[in-house]
Length: 311
Image 1 (spheres, one colour):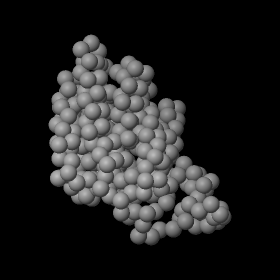
Image 2: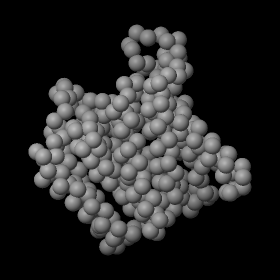
Image 3: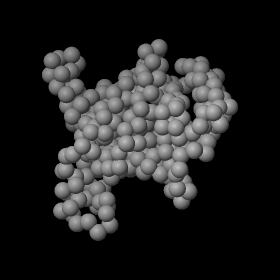
């Protein structure tokens, strides 16, 4: 159980850090997502080759129909990730993350009530109270940034962030279902990584071929942009590698502690993201807003403690 909590905490850090490379990239959001998927896929193939190839674990059934949920999750995740990157571009890390974090209550409630997670009685009270405290923490972090973002981008940025949060919440539900041997009748870890990463690439390519990056670009131009390898691809590659680690640890944490609790703990990424936005990217002045930031940090820690009582 303790290891499941530790994995969820590590995932919360990775979910914050893997957004940082986007701050340095101006690559088209769908192409960025595609290259993340490629790094994710390559890393998965390497893991499978070592772990299955050398006999550390038994190969998983790649033909089970439940993998269709993982493919669907890949499609939803591409939409969410595209909105996620657009929101970062428009309103910055600090403001974006608080709206995106609607994924927390969405994912937790879906997991808790749709698949009847292993939380009952007083534990449900602690889970819901922990979520409420986390929401209050996120609200406190919703500070007007000192960065010079165009006001006309604020509302679209918030809408994109909220949409990405809903997508990631639904994605968490699908991930939780396929991670449960009691539901799918088998154990899927690396098969999930394989289908999810492959679907990210496929759906990113399809979406980019349809919408492109410029309104008047031809299909040939879009295809040329898809296959172009240049220095822009390294940043999403880094994000993809971190996302692979986060996804793998998420699956393992789902097997060790109640899924709704594991998912809620990972939402502490709001804490790490705000730290990066405040102290590294200087989007918000700590000197001006130290009371709200400090209160938000205290509530974030408090929410984690409450969630531990839900175990």
